[in-house]
Image (tube, rainbow, N blue to C red; front, side, top):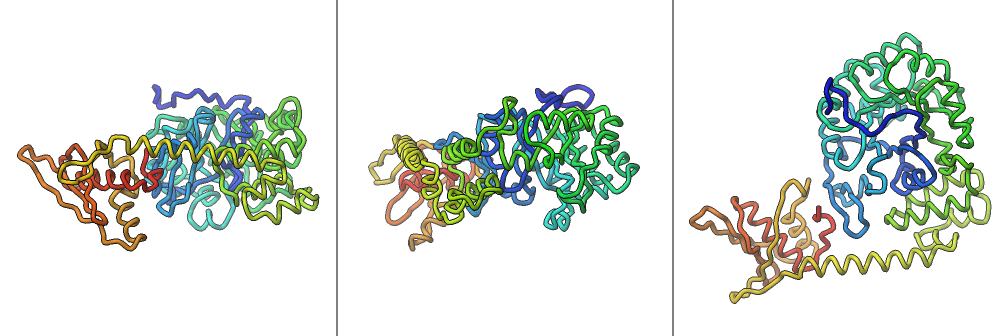
Length: 440
């Protein structure tokens, strides 16, 4: 943090064109596509703190990405170095402590964190998140203050306007007082939807009132190109502009030269989706949003009936690209697996050993022992047995027995538990069990 409590940041929040956070749409391929077309800043979709805090950070060597993996195996958040300096992580939270824990987990992989204080959906409201926070300025203050004082990257929030200008101005003054770096304002009330006119006059009043940068949002109905974004920013008197639906329908809206044909945009998106192994269901969903007005065309009808990534790619003649990418990933994974076991050796007592290291902080809510136990259970084998000993220097070593074979590490640990984790890790590497979830 810089002096006077303000954050050191390369983000000016001045005259920026920003991709808004969008549920299911704000995935890595969409963010990279927006950046390719000229977006200055991209937000990920809102991620709920409760779920994120259960994740483990994994450096995915195959995709060259950083994955936050939930214990159920799902990747909750994926990012890569191509977007790090322009990525804002948006969280859904209702608690200062959880908000700070979430921000501390992710701050090394993003450029800023943002708190969603405007989502009108029931799942947010019932959890005290999103627009529910608009009615609780004290909680807003506590959450933002905890973040500003606790992390080394910029903190922002995104709100909707309140029923009266007096209530709205009171809230934004509270927000400004927490020393956040910027404020994004969706110019509609909680109950209003896209069909309702956006209150540009209220956004302008907020911009006039505050000394921090204000980002206007909510104008997608009137935004078809870059020039429309500039016009909306000028009409609201704000520092920057954020777009959601306009970018969801055609991310090339960020191009100063004008939007590209939809087919070109779709092909670009699919290539990013394939490159970063985006799920089929999410890829299909994003394409359906882009094609919202042309789903009855031959391509749209084919998209509706797709069941696999290959079928989807074939519509736009990218099936070969998919197969080549999958083969490339397979070869990389095989190479990494060989590297992992290159240092293996068998002792005279038939114990398999390797030189490995164990760092508990890298494993989140899982451990090598948990992974090994789950694997043996799935295979119908007896659970692993650990034989641990302590030497005169009070260093522990452990040998794990699995399916008639024994495994250990060449190094010891100061605790019996850590020594057992080392042994389990060696076993996992020898057996070639997928360690993507444990490499970090």
